[in-house]
Image (cartoon, rainbow, N blue to C red; front, side):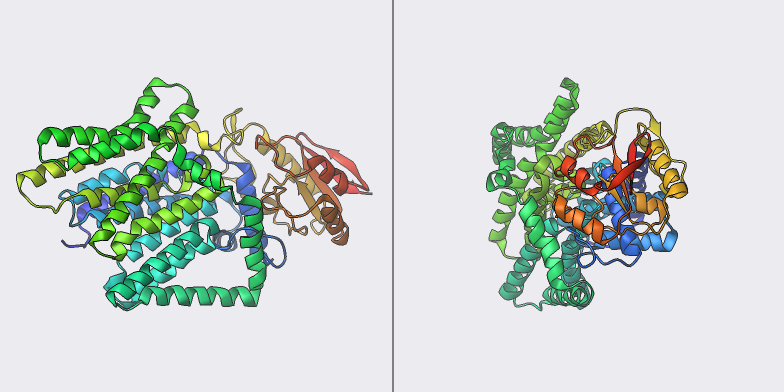
Length: 558
């Protein structure tokens, strides 16, 4: 079958891209989480100024997302809307990429491969990498990077440069988000290496992996120090964030599996029968777990119940995809058959952060890739006899049910902002900023007006060369003002802030900090500042309040 794009491919690709990008732009027009946006913007701005993460200040995340955003600032200026456009573009490309991956999985194995792939990709219009969380972020970028790597791995055997490009792409997620990229890289390198040994083929993918890792190590060594990088991105996060084993396997103890897993097992057994009634009943049973979120959507008015029903799809799909992928290996070891295992490694690595509830917002396309792999593996050869025609109808029926259910329930999940409930994104009137640098933000409540009052106070009263500390760092102060951060800590969060109050105080004195700004009214619901009272007391010793703004206290050194 030809892999060239026809007019219908371009129509669907443009439609998916525009629809997904439109959802991201719409989502951005109604919600901005200041906590996450400020960390991304201010960290990227200090990198744009030439400050080196890992060497000049502690930094627990890989650099690529921040380097890209810093480049946008340098090229187009400090305007938040430029970063919104980036999110929309990446979201659209991610959806199109996931669709093409699924189509490649189904091609030659499913009679109606093209239409089936479109139906499975439809939910990504609302559940794309940037749909739920529309601000540039490392999880979302890493989800996109994994999709690119998978797309190239499907084509690695087309020539030397395809293989090298695939190897390079496999490494990229490691430098976007380490808990996703590292397991993906390790499993993919091992799997590709085994294929090269078994099939005695040229290992251009491994060449690409080796070259990119070597180049990355050299760059780290000559810029920030490779051991600095390892400490801040591997050792320190492992000490602060690695969950217990019980939490890691807890996602596979979801109560819904007690009925959804037996449903799928019995359904798959019935689908193997030649009798028409068995196939119909089997399809109903296999599709039932994907229809259940629709039932909960109609029956329940509680957004968290609806979200729980939708998210319960994840452990079921992961288990089924793992079993099917391992069963497929009996036919022989190929990269194509290993792709679902590579994706499973990335997904389970992602769950090291906040398990299913908190981690899935940027990786829904990977779920669709896993579903596509299951459909492809269970499909028979695409013949034209009556049995095959009935099988094609079954595949289309399943894809239609899955696509519609995930599209509708995913849409309600996005609109409810259930995933963003850790911040007050649904309280108060929607406010847009007046300051040019902040245009593109949309925040409910008085947070933006209060922040703009602080910016006006700083413009009038605080010399630009004076060092400042902002507690807890929820606002993109340095991005908005263009000032140079002079204190190592921008965000007072236990995940990113490694210092004790006494160490913070010593650094404050050493760097001659003259101003401390304490935010009183936070958008984030739970202030994560470690030892907040002690920290504020230590950092304001010898300071006096010189400004009592609507949402802030401004302290100046005596």
